[in-house]
Image (tube, rainbow, N blue to C red; front, top):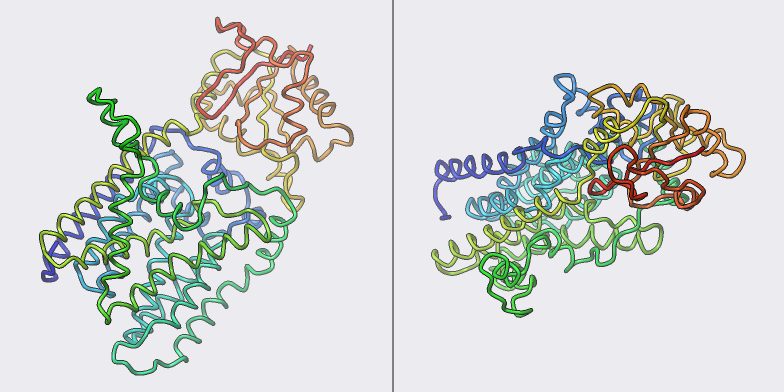
Length: 522
């Protein structure tokens, strides 16, 4: 890519954006919704607006999804909203890069965003993360245009996008406040001191827009602190792991690829770490080779990358472990911009073209392997639902184990009447057999349970099932110990699994990340 005129740059941007859309929208319906996507659909399909306030996330994305679902509720259509939001991030990143350092940097950054696997993957799910990243990119453009160039449109974009961030995700307000602080280190282009008044007005407007949600946010924050929260896996961020995870983590090592494709065994010499070397080299180049007039850009982008990681790491250590990779997704924006600055720091045109192409190909390889790997880890609710429809007998009951014993006491009876897993089983109930089966919901049951969990479950299931056979569907992830003990207990635990299917092994049937077993209660 060259430092050419506006028309070639816009043509290249259109091509990159089209590639981004194809990568994000291809085969969206191949996999069934997973549990978090099922929760999104449950919110907009079954629950009234009053129950949206029970979620840890503000309702902006759910409102958009509700309007979007008026046209269709198919998996493809619901996910397409995220694909479009993710694709819209490409021109936003281009505009930010062009504002910072010219069209070439903008184009490289747009191209890297288009094929960064972690952003691609989350742009293929019916969740709010692409909206959060898009708003982050627009808000960052806004503070650069406002503070650097003194443009009122920049401050307006910062205020609006900051409010969108705050209203789209539970951590969105923290990102908005981080960007508010970053605005203070952006210098004026003409060297003069910039006025505090536009920044104060824009920041105040952003915070005032969030005020109606503050009471709910306070309650949900207390609930996160007081109750169970999903712990991060070992090796999750901070800094180095974030770079690795966002760019090349899914890629097999070159040695494994050579052995699998060509049968050439090179031992451990060519490990997966080799893919990260060019990424780190280009990032280092951006930091050390920046011209004096560009150092403020590097400083702002490094802070935009490090500040969320540092903040959420501190919160995880001192409050609750919330540092999951997906809540760091917005830092992909400064990451790709730093990569673009590193590429453009090279002195020769051919060197810039070669380095940028290499980085883009590595990121594209990450997307290829990332989609393949995650496809194998996705929860097969569609397959599990169809399996139970095929083998269940009249009089059987259905129990989908929840990740918690009881729901939020603020939720309505309608919200507690249908769990997310149960709604996913029913979503793929093409025959109507599951809807006709007696069903027991863990959260609904435990609202009225006054004794031991196992006794309450057994009593409810014996009442529901005329035959004494119950189909238990569960994820192998975190389950309350009381439910785990009930699954493992006898008599009858696992008995009859596969009856009528030719299995007769007594073992649960596994559908990737789901387990289905028939329990004989009588």
